[in-house]
Amino acid sequence: MIQVAINGYGTIGKRVADAVQQQPDMEVLGVAKTRPNFEAETAIDKGFALYAAIEERADQFAEAGLEIAGPVEDLIDDADIVVDATPSGIGAENKTLYEEYETPALYQGGEDADLADTSFNARSNYEDATGADHVRVVSCNTTGLSRVIAPLREAYGVEKVRATLVRRGGDPGQTNRGPINDILPNPVTIPSHHGPDVETIFDDLDIDTLGMKVPATLMHMHSLNVTLEEEVDADEVRELFAEESRLFLIPERMDIDGSGKLKEYAMDAGRPRADIWENCIWEESISTVGSDLYLFQGIHQESDVVPENIDAIRAVLGEADAEASIETTNETLGIGL
Ligand code: NAD
Image (cartoon, rainbow, N blue to C red; front, side, top):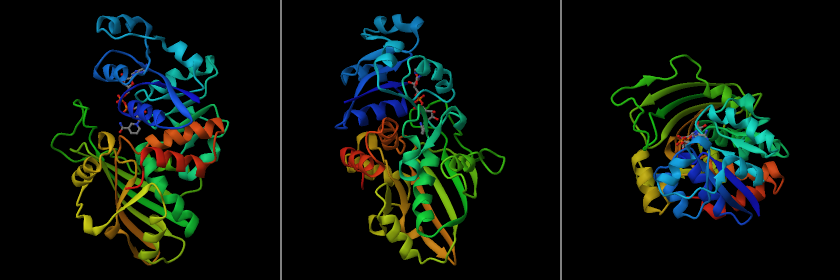
């Protein structure tokens, strides 16, 4: 069994921990947190060994009645791999810790690409991570874009991607985020940083992205225009996407008109935390005009990177090829709405 350490047990870390526990070939060795809170309490309730990420604050856990297994250094030393799911920029600070104990590390999309040996998306460049010591699982938006671009490149060739990302202001638990009643060009400079991030997965791709932030917490929404290298019928693209396990084509009959109903559907379907690991593409929106393809897709920012982290663990350790890993991850999590 691959022993996985999770450093940073928040929105992404707690989901990755649960997903690791569901895999037949890996288990959570422990999770590290900086301070006691409800997530620390549920980690203990789930049976995860809890480690103190900051030694000076270890007493706070005891004061809150939470048993600590040791300092984060012990966890990193004993683990086969660490998933760093700390806030943006902290992963970079933690890199020396992982190097000191020679533990391979996965970082998240909030870190700079040059922190890692490679950026990672299972569908697009799984093999690049094999044997790497430092791998960055790209952000929720970049994951969502890469999953669509990879099959289009293979089937038709892609001349140019233009994407407008309507981004949620914050996650449901982020009471300090906004806007509350506004629509922000964000970043206001064009193109946004998302395009170059997608180019860390496809280095020869021509892509421009624009970003906005809106008062929403449930999901991001992408408006996508891809100029293909040939003229393609929209039905053909629908068939191509239907073959992709992490693309959910929302059928017209479901009457899902936005991210609210998508999340409601995820709850009704019994998804943990109402997570939606798949890109949600409105089937009716898939349209072509000559060689231009258009579509709308919803991206659940809190969860689409979770299966990617699981696949990255296997990729780094050379435990399975892309197809086998993706299949195991999909089956165990129940991916495929
Ligand atoms: P979060 O704030 O929900 O969770 C981070 C956790 O790390 C918190 O529990 C925090 O207390 C803990 N932490 C802080 N400093 C630490 C340290 N030094 N050592 C150990 N733990 C520490 O953040 P998140 O949303 O889970 O984001 C984590 C990473 O994932 C970021 O790089 C982010 O950009 C990326 N990401 C986030 C989302 C999203 O929508 N939330 C989506 C994709 C990628």
